Amino acid sequence: GLAGPILVNGTARRIPLATTEGALVASINRGCVAITRGGGCRAVCRVKGMTRAPVVSMPDVVQSAALADWLESAEGFAFLAEAFNSTSPGGFLKLKKVTPVLAGPDVHIRFGALTGDAMGMNMLTKAAHAAIEALRSRYPAMCVGSLSGNCCSDKKATAMNWIEGRGREVICEATLPPTVMAEVLKVPSVGALVAMATQKNLVGSALAGALGGNNAHAANIVAAVFLATGQDPAQVVESAGCITLLDTTPDGSLHMTVTLKSLEVGTVGGGTQLPAQRALLGMLDAAGAGTPPGSHADRLAECIGAAVMAGELSLLSALATDDLLKAHV
Image 1 (cartoon, rainbow, N blue to C red):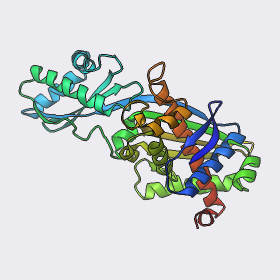
Image 2 (image 1 turned 45 degrees about the vertical axis):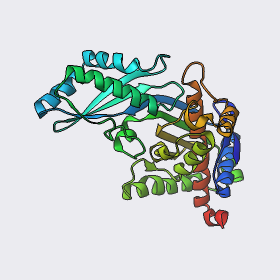
Image 3 (image 1 turned 180 degrees about the vertical axis):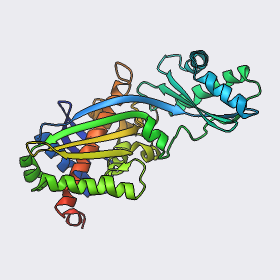
Image 4 (image 1 turned 30 degrees about the vertical axis):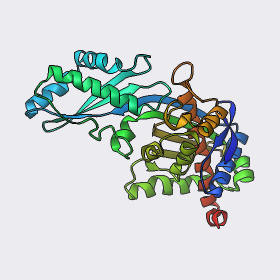
């Protein structure tokens, strides 16, 4: 289905959703209507870079620590960057950061790189392999354990992704006056909605020990847009990590933000080349490679962030008015 339009950074966008849950499309659409009537949302995309983290072993901890120190030096970065970036003749891949993580004699080497409009997992795998092969020439005693040592961290909800980010970080913000809250969402008290959202998204998630789960149902929206636009559905695990915050402004309006810390999306390669998925990316003005590189993936990420905000707003409002059950049965 299609939700919206929703006003994102001044442009009206329709949100493509692939889901068997009709109530989800209707709910997101309701949130889109409310946000647009309130003046739209502002979305900011920060590119964190795709990552791959091979694990290598040294003969002892003195040598593993020495390797880690060298990897963090300017000389070490330059050495690895030459081999790493050479795997992308078009220049779309650029090494951004190298982070060594020690565990005894093992060194997990987390490469972070810019990948243009590609999600970039295959690009990182190829480049990390080249960098590790170059590293062997300098450290012949080094033993390669695995090209992926799980510090990446791909398709897993991890503290590293939540803190460091992976792919893109998206932050969306909107302010909705009490009249819109009452007319569209049937919420009579913004203060009561804010209090309930704190109980649920912050306190409840903390009691459950959630990691990146400080939200109502961000995964619902991320999964639906991922399927519609040809993304890797398994990466919903980390891409749906989201913190949703609500507050009341001095004039009684609702101020709302959603922050997705590790949104892994692309507009070239993989499933984005399928005809239906490419057409829906085109509807978002985000099909194929953008100018400058990365701009189309940024736009897709911003639209996903806006859709998540719409879905969060609608569900939280339904919970505040005790309409959740009625909407589903």
